[in-house]
Image (cartoon, rainbow, N blue to C red; front, top):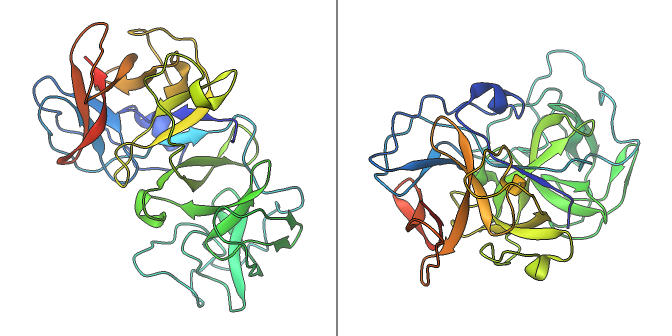
Length: 295
């Protein structure tokens, strides 16, 4: 498990800019009684009330305070030069390149048998393609990363993570919610896909996540019941928060359009709200059928 800060990107454009994501300040409304939460790719999310209108938005982010980042020796500018074009072979249909030199998410800009990997913030580098699949153990050093194209060797223990800009870049059921930092504490503009931990975010304690940790509810467009383990927060229900896991176990950080507060997570099939009503998290027109928040 990566040590993580589970970042809630709000309507405040200044917070979104750090992740290189478009802002959701153009959210028109959430409908009567709605509460807004950001989602993975394009748009924001209404909890309760009407679905509202949406002209696009930012993405959820899990921000590890210590990384993940490319292993030592994999940094540097990666041979940036020229116009930083995106040409070359190996590109993926429907993926829009954003990085210079080459794009590690779309795997454009390198000539086969090489593939593009992360070099520095929004900059790629061409490396020999490895064979490691998403989730497999890996090794990396200067000029080498044992993962396949569209993956990068990250974290401790090191594993191949699928790279992404939006949820649609991830494998089925995964969310584009791991913010890769280069250096630590500074978003690189690249993200990685996270699979649901399958833990219970309504538990007011560590549960299956282990001592000092807790389970948090972080849905996205491709998985409306996605959960993950992260370091437990201490902010009580109803108080201001910035990150999802600022909140005490059993809560999550949501936005009402003007401020972020911790709200109790509830199980829709058997709600047990201390106050309020258990309202499903709605992503577009598709509500979560498993979890909601008490409001």
